[in-house]
Image (cartoon, rainbow, N blue to C red):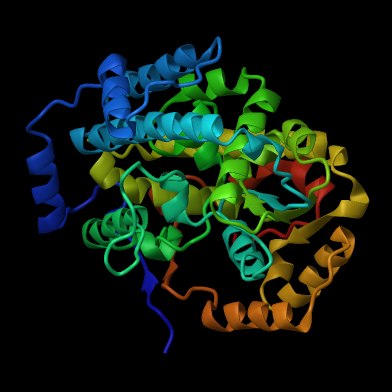
Length: 419
């Protein structure tokens, strides 16, 4: 029996559950203070060290990040509290990284060799593909729990059952999410073992696009787009080197939609990478993204504002895809593949044969069995599917929205989905 289809009749005017109402009533009582000095002091207290390895613009980036959150006046105190925890956590992780690099300078000479990198829009099969590639036991990937706390806190070792406390914290957070916003699993389930995007660790340098997914921050988008990402991708590589040092193997599987508009910095940082591009009808990407955002906003915001979501994310997806079309040639043709979403389901092993051949890596029978095991255990729609109603919830037809993406359809093998 298949999982249920989710349909939202209250997406843009939510009817909160008792649990959701109680959470908001409890958290709205206190104004969350985002003072940078106070957050930095908390990070220092937690990490037990005080060297942020701050480059010239580091505190400017932190100020821009926090300033963007402050400028979004529609946020509930619940999400302001979550974002405050995020800033403290990022600062603490950065402190721990600096300390580790001081103790083990050899980390920075660890090669990140021949990574596989999945590049594509959110909701275009990137998560499916990167989790599948991560089933190859010869490769290292970034599970969600580790993306949130890449470096252990001094003095916090495994518990009596041998479980890392960072994993336990991620699991507790996920369990709470399943209670407060259960439909999240059908849209994008971030359970502790799920493979996460490395832009989460790029955020230790306060230089990624991640904040756009948490709040309405067009100012941060513009600031981020003005940064020299080659430098920041270099920092991200340093974090990957540290993670490799702590727990091998050293051959990575990476993925992020952000790379679509940063192919130059990506290839400068990982020149021997083999890249798998996933392509999907941008309408499917946008409707999936804004439905997920609107659902999450019932706890994050005082009002949903579907028109804002449509306008912002249609523009954002267009920018990402224009970056991909512009810079696709920067990735060598003999070390990259373009995968249409319509080819992904059911043809994965053929696609992986091609990808491994281009990388010059043997696809052994053992690895092939691991891939098949993953596919058998993770059918599409495992957690349920979502019925997307673009016209009803966002007041635009798929064809209207699709018309702004002719440049993308002309360049890649993409099929329109739905009408």
